[in-house]
Structure formats: structure tokens, C-alpha cells
Image (cartoon, rainbow over all chains, first blue to last red; front, side, top):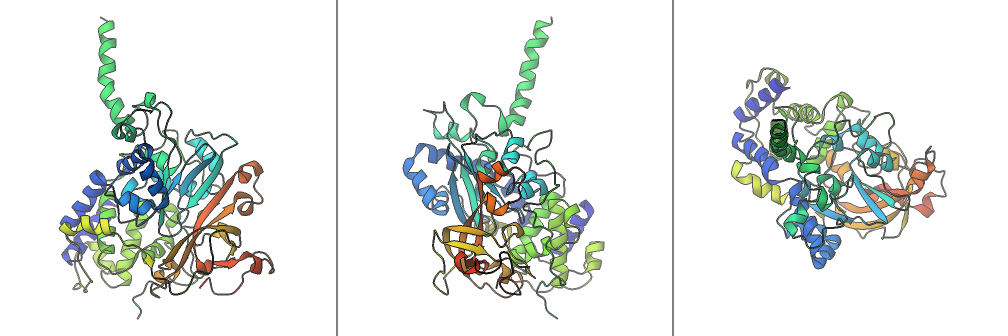
Length: 216
Length: 253
């Protein structure tokens, strides 16, 4: 595939159909500027600002745009609030529609045949694979993104997060919780979840140090 | 010679996976990928960027891209970005923008054809922030309102459609009206935007999966889809007909 994509890029740029610099800008945008931290800021603001939350649930597109997130694959946003009684889950069974301005590019599992086939048929079993076991009393509502409406789940604010500021709250909001396959992290579990790769890489030398000291 | 994307008949979408059995687990032993894991091969970022950049030249629309992808014969065995690359090559070849030899050799063999625009790096941020909203002025008043009980079209659709098979011929309730939107079925086959009212319709799990082995799972869930008006009939009228019989031939438009 590597050679095939290189050939394609060469032909398209030599024919003048594309600006090679635009390709780099596009890649950089989705690597550094447009990703799930945008959605996390939306969620954190909704948790602390009741007026914003009401606006977000009524007109998701406008409320999200007020924070600077808009455009491609998020032109028509609907926000779904998870509660104890109702749990929302988002899928695209026909392709891989996903709210890019707030979540960035979709993870591989979201685009995979297992998720797309099973989410609309056995959502509880799918959620269980993500470690989310909902009580029988919770109703599951699955939303299949079949048109240009894009869905963002507003996860429940975790217990113990009272008094935290928006930035600290946003760090608790995982990508998976905004798709509906997970919940926001509890404050005590910080370091788990989406940032755990970085966190464990950083903590590995630190945890190795005491043990080497004690072995002496 | 038509330059529109018309895959050979019969139209077969290989992407309509909702409800299919046998695809296995979603989450592997290593758990879901981390938020920062965007790419799984070095060529994938370029595949994304080339697809977005060529899409912005105006040589085809998003629904034509989806049609090109979902009808790829190798759909089931290709990875996500492989599907994107194969479909991009196909769209380019169908429109005479690039020929097969050029793709094979990576050399220019025929002069370029004109494209509507060539987006520059400086335009990228504004173009992405603008997106391509699909809301349009309505050509007629909406036929349905929130709370209405509807039944979806039940037959085969001989072209690109966004009405998944698992939700065909099913009874649901309109839970939202989004105004008129570009109608994907028409837009994908070069018949223009044909704006139609768009609704969110919610189906009970037991309506979709009456044969579900785990009846308790189906009874505590629902599925919503976004459905254009031509996909829908009032349930009261359709229910007089034989259930899940096609109400007319030729697709929901």
C-alpha cells in the first residue's frame, strides 16, 4: 500500500489537482488540533454551566460552535445526555460517520465490522466488552448515524468531581464516554484511560527507582 | 459517456453491516486503542489527506464517495483506509482524471483535466471549519411530525441508500425533525441534491429483532436512525398492506 499511495500522491500533485502543502496541513490538523480533547472541553463546560448545557442539548451545533468547534463531519450536531435511566450509544452501521470537530478521527473498532454489526442488535453485550455493565433498569438507546446528523454523548459527571474546574473535569472525559461505550473516569482513577500510555511511560522509571533502591 | 459514478447493476452495497452475525468481538485482549493511536500504517495519513484534498476539488460529492466505497468488491477484506484508497482510485479513473497506467507507474501519461478548484494549504483551516452543511430550504411542508408512527420502506433499493436493511419495513416513531437535507440517494447517483425532510425515527428493539435469542436484551433497548421522508410511510396506511412487502418498485424515491 505504501508504494501505491506514493504513486497516487505523485500523479495527483504532478497533474496539479492537489497542493502537497495542503496534505501536510490536513494531516497536522487531525494529529494536533482536532481530536477528542475538543469534545472533552464541551462536556466539561456543560457539567459546570447549566445554561450552556441546556443550549447544548437544544441546539448542539450552535453551542459547540460557540467554543470554536465546527465544520466537516460536525455540521449538524445532536447531543445526547446519559443519565441513570437512559444510556446512549452511537454507531454508524453503513460506514463510519463520526463527529470529527469534537472527537477527531474515529478509532479502528468504531469502523470495524464487529462494532457496526452488533451495536444495533446487542448493545449491552458490546458495552460489556468495554467493561461497562449497565443495570437492567437502564434503558439503552442506540443512534445509527445514517444521514449528516452527528451525535455526541454527554456522559454523566462522575461522583467525587465536585469543586473541580473545567480543565480538571475535561481530563476525566474519555473519547469512549462521548461515543457511549464508556463512562467518564472518576477523579481517583486519574492516570487510567486515554492518557494511560503517556502516564505509564512517565511513571515507569519513577516506579523502578524505589525498587532498585530497596534492593541495595 | 456519462462521467457520473454509476456502478454496474445490480447495485450491491457491501457496507450495510447492521445486525449481521459472525463478526466476533469488538474489543480485543489488548483493550480499545488509546486516543492518540490515529494510524496503523505509515501510508494512512496520506490516504486520508489525499481523499480529503481530492474531495475538495469538487470532482464528486461525499455521497458519491460513499457509493464508490460500499460497492468495492473487496470491501470485506480491506482495511478502512485501504477502502478509501481503492475508492479514490476508482473515482479518479471513472472521471478520466487519472488512468490505470498512471496509477500503476506513478507517472503522468496524459494531460490533466480541469477540476473546479485546487485547495491550498492556507485554505484548509477555513474549509474544514466551514464543512459542507446539508440543510436546504424545504420544497414542500413536512409530511410527518414528532410523535407520528411510521413504517419504513421494505423493498430492495437498486442504488446507494442510507436506509439500512435491518430497519426496512419496520414500525417506528418520529422523535425529531431536522428540516430538509440533501437527499443522499439522489445525490450519490448524480441526480442533484433533491432536498427532502429528514427525521430521526426510533424503533423498539423487539420490533427490529423479534427473533432475538436474548429477548430481555431486545426489550430494554431501541435504535434510532436518521431517515429522509421518501423512506417513510404513515404506519396506519402501510399496516393495511402485507407486512414487509415492498410498497412500490424501484426504491424509495
